[in-house]
Image 1: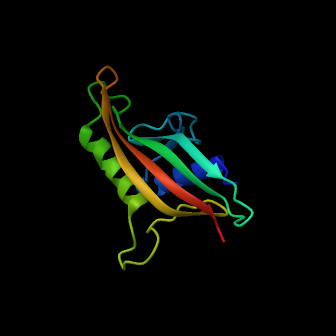
Image 2: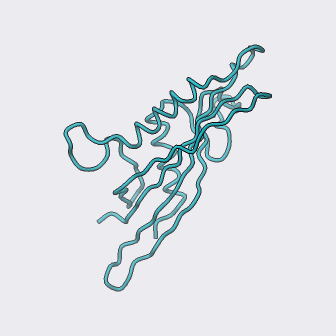
Length: 156
């Protein structure tokens, strides 16, 4: 069985690695040193579908397809009343996330450039779908949304 919680942790860590910015799973990321929310830009990660099979008599391996929504957030600078999120910043962060997750090795080798680390699990295929952008004029927040679908199997 491929545990969804382990997949979520792996995806969140991969997004931190490729964007260089904090990621919150289902909520604004919190700085552990201060206990306060990180200021934008950051990524909100939402687990969506997780469909799995636990193998058969002929094949003891498990497989799963997991879908995640990454919401890349640009917002106002704390303490600056006239600041606001910018489309450019949200798109910049989304591009870093998409490119980092989907990048293939430059030499044409198999797999992906940036590893998705999930103990005992191999991600053999990835897809990315732009789900659009939103803005909240009252909060001066801009977002860009990408959904990632991951095809997983237990490692041999």
